[in-house]
Image 1: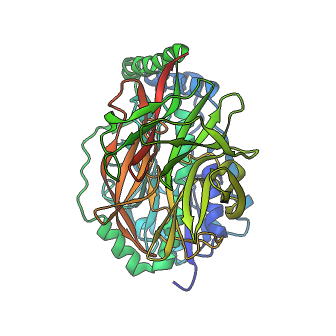
Image 2: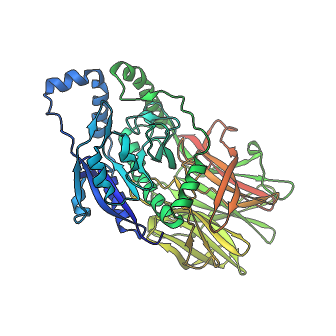
Image 3: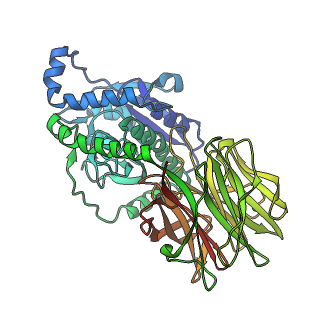
Length: 553
């Protein structure tokens, strides 16, 4: 499209939550869309209820109200996604019109007069940030429909409250859905899905992370609509929605007292069991390795040997490099006393003997994930430096111990675990990026390309983020080739950080397309003292990994 998309916003009031304010700010500041009208719900508000009326109406859910209040008092979540913001501060020159919907028990529809007023703005997209279930002609007021969030995965959770049941029932992940509404409530066209890790304890923290991350879904889709054009965009959307999607769970709602009283002890005992275990045990990352008879990755994890660090630190993120017949393993070494990691290395020989790790790269900020690669006869390291807001490149001037700063590939970005891979002369960078403060860095994989891996001019992939799923987004080691196919190791962070490694076969990797499919999973089931695994690398006959080990205090 040559012109900007014309956007209208349906509001419940002139105050919006912080996450929605940031979403609208991002849309308004982009080159792909402009907000041309705000439509406020002017339905009569019921008179304020007395305390007795509130108790009488809500007495069946008093325990739920008390639980939410306790959660707010016990757990903080900053920045607060739900802090109220005045929309007029952001869009002072955008007209605001009030409409009085025709209301039934659960639904809102607009009069022909109000629909005609909205039609006069010639909208491309109408964003629903207020009103109840919409019915009727308002769903046709914009060329590409009414776009609406459902803060939950509508394949497994319909209803509400958003982000509550996942915590209460102990679901490892919480989904989110962006869709185009239709008159059939359960048959909207899904535009985008994403998933985040569920906080194991706090509804407030879980919701806060979910909403901060989810705000990016809608601006991204608007940008895609503008870039592809309406015909191609809608054809692609309909193709992605071609398969039937069945929903077989209950319709969720605010829990009544008896139901919550039955379920809450289970959640409490999960939390209590975890806290009790922490009194006697702590989790520590250790190193794992296997030496095969032939070159290639070792696939039987129960045969791996263990390298256990002292209890004052952990060792993780191993990358192995075979140089002149010697195996050099670069790792993150994290000291609990300083709460900061640096890069160290040790030598591993063919018999499994290893030297004590030695520090080779340390900065005032945290470093981890020492991705090693070679280019034009030189050895480079791309360690994670997210705490500095950069992706930094280091060149080895005397292998393996002397490294010097070579370049900053990206700055002003919270990026973790950058992983490079070259295909037909083009370099690809796979990296997880946290776009919004308050969101997690585990959830979204971004892809960039460059002809020169030392350059700071990396081209973002148009499908970014190419993966938006806490179960498989974050890199977990080098991309490797097996039987002429590309495979990308990734972390499954849904049960908790570094719970497992997914091996994903890359099906398509071009400047316009990226697809992958998970083919196998490495879970820490071979050793009852392990609770996680989150890195896999190999070179020559040596394969290295790491495990989160439960140790006595």
